[in-house]
Image (cartoon, rainbow, N blue to C red; front, side, top):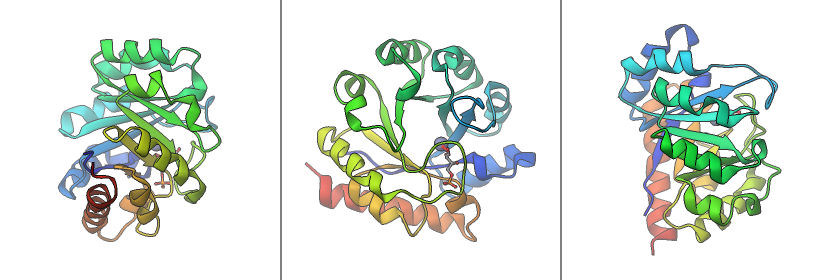
Length: 225
Ligand code: DX5
Ligand code: ZN
């Protein structure tokens, strides 16, 4: 049964203090750190790339969950692997050869995640892609910016994927907070990304603990085989 993994999105942290912010999240109970790489082309925003990820790497032992919002995902696989990335999640909309890309990511020593935007149906990943990848990310906002409103209409996609792939890590990203965690947990998501919802909270440790508890409870009661 998939267990809860909470992945604070560093997009909402204090960028002038990346190392401290990474450590702060681990102390607050985060399992993973979500690193949003944007190229200004696949999405209308620029953030960080391999040099920044590699600069944070020595300061934390957290698992690096890299969300690649880039037009040419195969271009950055080796750089992100060298920088210390561990999950390399590419967008299905950005590649013609997802199977080749998953193999390339695995050969580089990383796990492979596949993301779908709110308008992309699950059929884009069901089958060989879902069977070969290590995680599916169902976006719950249009990728590009933090602080957007959670799109509950994406939940049927999460639930359908969870029923099809009971053991797979299924991640949700965008607008996750104490108000929206129930919908995500009940649909079967087990990897929870939150930027604003965690970094801007008064007590991030409590938010992370609630996320974990709700996800694990839903997995045990609703989805246990
Ligand atoms: C948006 C990014 C998210 C973002 C989420 O494109 O993929 O990871 O940081 O931010 P919140 O949790 O504030 O919606
Ligand atoms: Zn993200």
